[in-house]
Structure formats: C-alpha cells, structure tokens
Image (cartoon, rainbow, N blue to C red; front, side, top):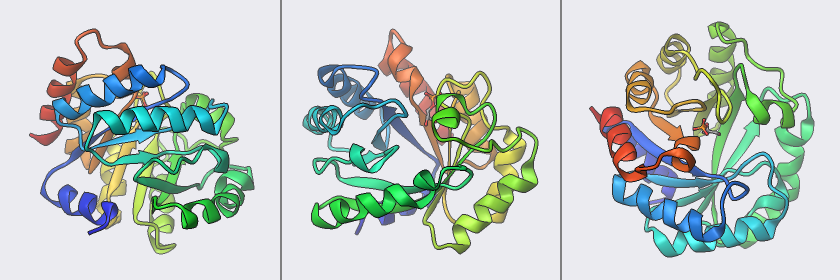
Length: 245
Ligand code: 1GP
C-alpha cells in the first residue's frame, strides 16, 4: 500500500492530524525532538516545508534528524524544486492553483519531477489553494487570495483539483494566520468533493481544531503550535483528541 492509499484509508475512519515542521524555524536537532513529541502525542504524519527556506541542505538535515526520531511518514511540503530531499518518504506534489506565478503552478514541478523519479520518495498529487489572509505563503507564492467568504470560488478550485486527478486538496489560511479558514468554507468544499480535504493555517488550540474537523476537514495541520507550546505533548494530545472525537 502506498503512503497516499494508507492516509486515504485512515481518513475514512476518522479525521487525522499532521504536524508541519519548517526547517527554517528550528535546528535539525529541535526538529527531531518535535517530531518525536508529535509521534508520541498521536499525530499521523510529519510534513516538512516552509516559504522561506534557503537550501536543500537545510531540508536534508532536518529530514534526516526527523527520520531518526519517528516512524511516521515524513512528507515534504516544498515551495520549490530545490527543496526536495531524498531522505523523505513522500512529497506532496502540489500545485499552488491560485498563484499568478506559473512556477508555483507547474514549472517548479517540471524541474523537480526527475529528482522524484530517481529517488524513492512517493509523489502525492495535491491541489493547494491559499485563502485570506494568506500570510507569508500568500506573498511569497504571489497568490490571488480566495476571499474569506468566497465559498463558491473555493468550491470551484476544489472541484477543479479533483477533476484534474489530484488526490488531495489543501485549503490554507497561511502559517500563523490570525483566523483560520471558516467552517462554512470547509463544509461547502467537503460536501462537493470526494478527495480528502486538508485544512491548515492559524489552528492553535483544541477548540478550533475540533471545529475544523467537524466542519469537514479530513486532515488538520498545525505548525506554529509545535514551535510555541511550552508543554507541547500535552497540548498536542488535546488537539488530536479533539479532532478525533
Ligand atoms: C502552514 O497550514 C500550515 O502551511 C500551518 O499553519 O503554522 O498556523 O499552524 P500554522
């Protein structure tokens, strides 16, 4: 079974939590420690990526340290072809569908595809759409942000992703967003698609995480919380329990 098949199978039973680690925000040792804690708390995968990375070495070192500390799948969440690592298990082969820059839509993929082919990492096709406020990802990604209340456009993007054959759809408010994607947008998108819906950006506590899962998120992603919580394991256990309930 591929990693994507296993994730899809699991989302049919209950919503999942993925932990996002940005190699630009901590040392490889810290990333390893955070991955270990996320694993013990019950997270289902570790995503690795960020909008401000500077080198492949940075990603390689973080991924190696994470792999030493977890048995969970380590999935790259790359902002460009040069941020791939052969040490990861899989890569979200993701198109930023509402970017004005063709690089983020398809051209970086053309550059990165041979690397994926010649390494053993599994490509997982994903449509990626950024909603207001978008934060750094929205700026770096040169995105025409979907307006907070423009549910119709979000549904259109989600359906287009599914019809293009993508296996996952990610609705992103941007890392550190003061407010996450609305419950209304999540539930409308969820009602219209049959591929798993991933939601992230600005989800900081169990109450919000639970709301997003109840609205229809199959996978809830948290990143900033991992960097900021003092008692991370306790906070993550609470978040993960609230998603699964
Ligand atoms: C970013 O959605 C993720 O791609 C995580 O966002 O850092 O706000 O949890 P946060």
